[in-house]
Image 1 (cartoon, one colour):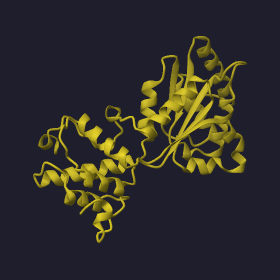
Image 2 (cartoon, helix red, strand yellow; image 1 turned 30 degrees about the vertical axis):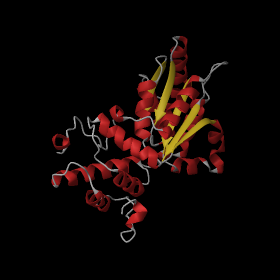
Image 3 (cartoon, rainbow, N blue to C red; image 1 turned 180 degrees about the vertical axis):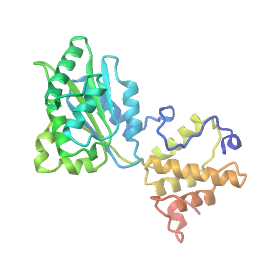
Image 4 (cartoon, rainbow, N blue to C red; image 1 turned 60 degrees about the horizontal axis):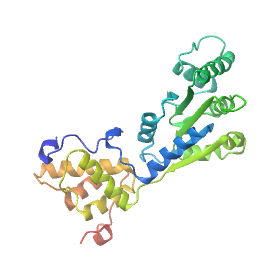
Length: 280
């Protein structure tokens, strides 16, 4: 509703992950580069964790876009409810028949992976929401990760999940699985400088060449969001709606406060100490 008012060509703060607005900030760039490097070295199981809203799905999409041509992707966006269900889902992603005796699926998967390896292809499976995988699905992943030739792995697995995944894997009975994870990245919240750069990049990508958030307002958004990109998007979007409704060309103090009050999960300012939020 405010695109024309501010002179935007696209909405900069949508909640749906959009690679068009990707900004190579250190937390996300490190996760992507580490994962691509690990895949290039032939590592078996790789883990990416991050709190809700830190950008795991966007990182996943960037990984998909940047996979070298010799990798074949199998993407499992929802967690399997069991080990057999995971093998079936992976078989379907690879175009294999998943009917019949489930005990034979691993053998069929191995033969399919060997055929792809002979054709110069390596299969990478990306498993999103991995913190919701039950123990027997994790065991199925561990066993699939053991499929290999004498020289290299046949299947590379990237797990993306929330911090609950770390707590799950810390259990004693999952120590075998934990030891199979060779590289791990964590998506931390953005710091102040990264938050300001993130907001500016998204506005510039949307066609904005002038300032919409002054420095105090940017600081307030960072404080309220805790550096979580999803919350930053919500706060900026709501502040721009408020500015548009007042026919303003910038989001000022009041508009940002309205956005903070209206956003669940946002840290509320100490109203009696505005200086702490960068406001005089």
